[in-house]
Image 1 (cartoon, each protein chain N blue to C red):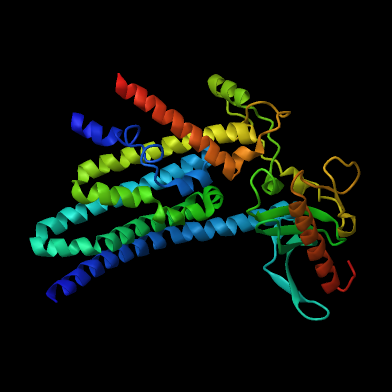
Image 2: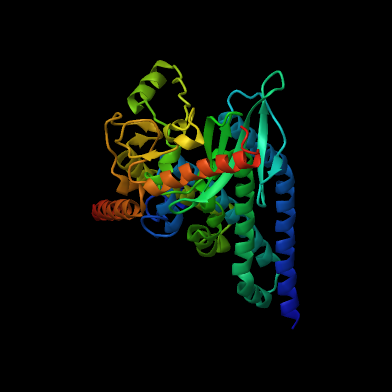
Length: 214
Length: 211
């Protein structure tokens, strides 16, 4: 009987010490975690609304027929509204795809960003693929010569296709097809369609809420 | 000195956690798609292994010095919960730090960071080594096992990234016209690469021991 109390005490002390240590680490990292998630949100806003220099807090509009749409307004240097950032999520092939899309007041897409996805690597996950041009040999040569390689942080090519289109022009084309529209990723039709539908619907919904004006 | 070196180096080849003990395969197969992921996972697991090995070795020596023989036998009954609490704490520490200071890596590794808790390498080393050895030996053991784990991940991911994505650490290897073998970045590619590597590892180990 005495033993079980001692065992309980040992386990309790171990747990309490661990809890204490975790509390300290949580306090130390809390600020960095909050900062980094706030920063990544602002970065997404900047990607989808490249012309805006400042952004509003989250606003919402009632939808005719119930529900509401939330969005962020983007302002230019003089304080005029240059666009709206809309967020949406939709089931892709094997994960929920979260997107953010920016439109100008006329409904033309300014930028698209995939916030979160866990689609098949090499197929659906290519919605976030950036075309790399720097080869390993270039990088090694640069390193040997003591130069730093030019950082080529460009936009993922799939997301770039949306820029300049309106919701009405978001037809999904095959990868090999020519013409204006969204070229699907080879082998990832479901992902390409889901993403495009999410963009189209979030814009449609926002336009309905705005009263069909813009 | 020779003894210390042996505590460290055994984890790299002789008792390599992946290719010889064959533990911790879930993160190994899942994370080894790219070299940068492998490095991140290797570093995170090594940190947890180091922390838990040191604390467990220290705690067990402390209890060994404080408790009577009979109580020590009883403590054996609660050793697994003690290990798990300690390991889970270190994993949470890694999780919080990575979330705060390396958000991009954190997003890529995703669920596999919290899953280090159930990585059998860590519990395995706690049970098989740290519980019965001193702090110094356990530190060396953790560093060696961590190095062996990271090395195995790097080997696997180098093959998978080059063949499956055509890149090495994010840089193109074959130029833009190369069509990568997608299967290598998917689950079957992980198992194929792992199987061939394990076979090669055992073959060379056996040949080396014969001479």
